[in-house]
Image (cartoon, rainbow, N blue to C red):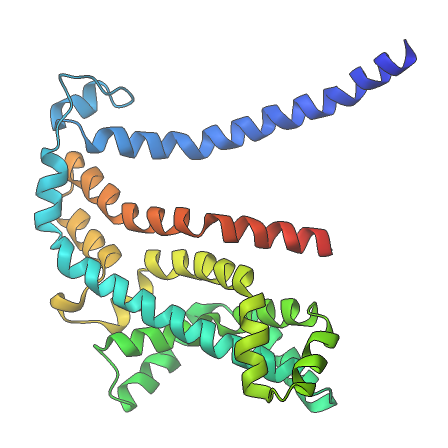
Length: 282
């Protein structure tokens, strides 16, 4: 009887936790449902039934019109190119810098790593003006590569911190065996470290990829040509010109969010594995 009572007492905090988590999930899902169901609804139905989607109010017209007016193909290509360039720079430079930090064991390198980690606390908005001035001198304004360099400068400290932490967890015996077999530092990095860091690379792609895709500030400042605008920037201009036309605004919002949602689902397993591995190590 005492065991049963004890188990019942243990279940009460679990029930309370589940209720709180359910409320938090509802808090996040309600705006998502509101935007999603209104994206496939006639304008007059949005004000009458904003939270319910019926057969009579259902339509694809909002998506089709928003697709054309957003110049979706061009903006999607611009966003995808910036995302690919930025993530390539972050993964390559971040992993190489972390490898350079953990390979030699001296005080100067440790201080340099501490400096990198300290840069995480610097708000990215502070660096926008000097970065923009630097881009002008390098003639990288209105350049996809210039935008990618800005994102690399903003997010590299965090990426270096992640890669260095996971590289330190790799047993040194593996590296020593590779050096005995004739692997130099570069071959060790390519053939030993990077295959073992697929999980952390997936985490970097998800965390930084979502931030880069949804960012509005950097493209707004660096890009001035309409043909180079990203999807979030096009949506910002589109929604500003369609005040009150909520059917088109919701349709455009769903179109912009769809690619990054697919991207997140594709790398979801790597993200969860990395989080679980980090929690177990802690």
